[in-house]
Image 1: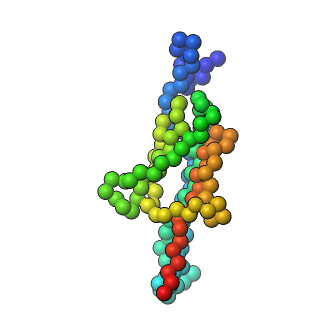
Image 2: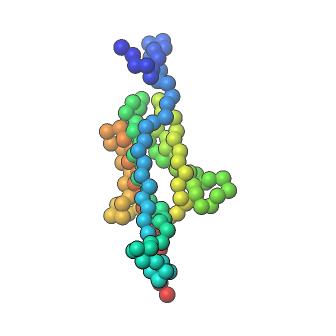
Image 3: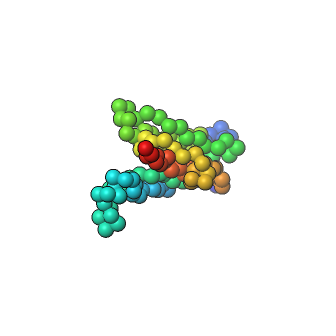
Length: 135
């Protein structure tokens, strides 16, 4: 029996291109720098800022299961505030892209970076570098 997502053509199963399912989280929080410590408190907090992202993208029906999906970072037109993260896995999945904040990433596993592909799920977790201001 052939699924509705595929077609049987000349002895080969052809998958229809489709977008992968995904589950993403944006990690937000407060930055308690010197300015915010003097002007805000816990009852009246400063505005939240984006501190990182968690991307979980599901690729259960990949044709070539030996090649892991990859992500690339692209410029977002004229905006220097944001950039585009694009995920590419190959057939039968189309590329999927998200607009994210353009900041420097923390690549340390201790600080939350993770990029793994296991059991058909691509996990890309990262936090942004936090710059401590010193005199």
